[in-house]
Structure formats: C-alpha cells, structure tokens
Image 1 (tube, rainbow, N blue to C red):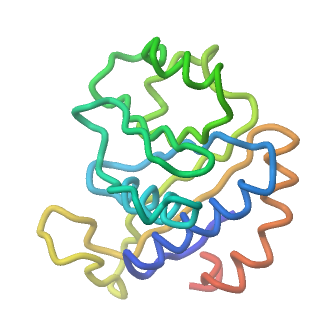
Image 2 (image 1 turned 180 degrees about the horizontal axis):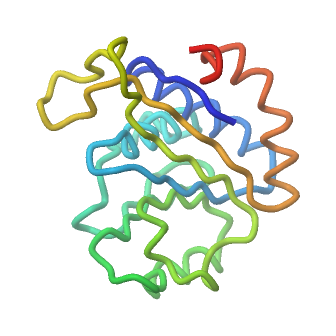
Length: 181
C-alpha cells in the first residue's frame, strides 16, 4: 500500500492511525525505514501520542540512546539501530523488556537487524520524498525532507496482513493513494 503524506501532521496522523489499529490487534512490531530526516521519529511521535499515557511522553529520536521507553499503555520501545553494524541483535535490555511484557516496538533502521532476529509479525513502513515539480517543503529546516512523503506500508505475517487489510479503507480515505497523486 502506498500513500502520499503532504505534511508532518499527515505523518503524525499515519502514526496515530497505526497505533489505534495495532492496539486492537496482536501485532506489536512496526519497522520504520527512511533516510536521515525522513520522518521516522515524526511518525513515532504520532504513534505514541495516540496511546493512553502518550500525553506524558516526550518523543525524541533514539539515535544516541539506542532505545527510548515511553510511559504509554502498552509501553512503547522506540529503538534506533543506525549506529550498530549490519547483522546486529537488539540490546539485551530490550530483548528482556520484549520477553517480559507486551510492549510495542518501533524500530528505526531495522535493516541493520540480523534477518533471523526480525519479528515474523510486523508492519514495515518506508518513507521516501516524492520527486517532481509538484513537491513542496514539508518542514522549515534545511535538513528535513523537502518534498511530500510517499509512505509504503507492507505487512509481514498473516496477522499483520489482516491488520493492514482492515485498515486499508480508512488509510485510503484519509490519505491520497500514490497512484492518484
């Protein structure tokens, strides 16, 4: 599924819609793919804000801490593997938290995770700038994405596929599908 996000608010709303849908399912893993400044943390901010307790969370990029834990219900582990080498494992503390509870895992730069360590049930969200003359700046910063974002969502696993299938009409109603842009 491909959607056009026209603003940071759209990116946050996509995150919120994913959080609400995932809260009603057993899918707990959301893998976020994008270049630096591509909207991963903005999407995470929307996701966290839609959960109970999200108003108490200060969502920031976990690039230097590797993992932020937010006081939501259920908890959100927001991790970033950018500084790890390819074929990495999640840090031991994170593995323990995932085994002991039922938190959401929002994983930035999941391509660095060893293939055998990837969750079987998950949604993969890829954010890319849309090229072309019709593109406009999303953010004010010169370091941010300078065009609309194309969000590609792919389900991995049967439960994730059912979740995405159920969410598809609401997403297409809220965001312009890429083939209509």
